[in-house]
Length: 191
Image (tube, rainbow, N blue to C red; front, side, top):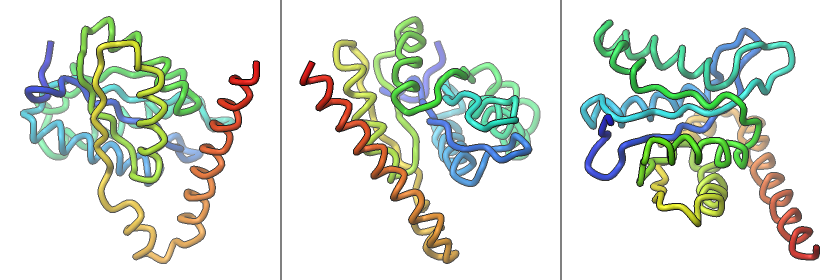
């Protein structure tokens, strides 16, 4: 089994929107870049689980596949064919998730099959709080420890480039997702 470093044999990179051409959007690229940096610094070993299904109407490629293609291209740019092949052997795709909760549900059996006890969870800081909460909630009865690894500079990037509308949309989306989740919990408790 590949090793990422002494306590993290695996990174789970959460999916993000892809563009109409089937390429990762800015957030997805930033997540993949962060994962690749950690992976390379740890000796280019360990599993990278990329999550995300076909979330965009009319685009036949999954978020996970689009991020994998991007990651492989970046690995070849930075380290040649050898690094690309090494990464290819470490990539695992979870292509059925449409939500963060789905990602938690669909990655758990994969990690249990691989007997992985610790996972680095990668997303942007806005999303990672909720993602970490959802993964912890779903993994609570299993011996897998989660370590959040936020992508640095996402909010700063949007602020610096005066992309206030996008930043507002990201914040509203996360707020709405929290509200939806909390309502679901309250409804489940009433049953």
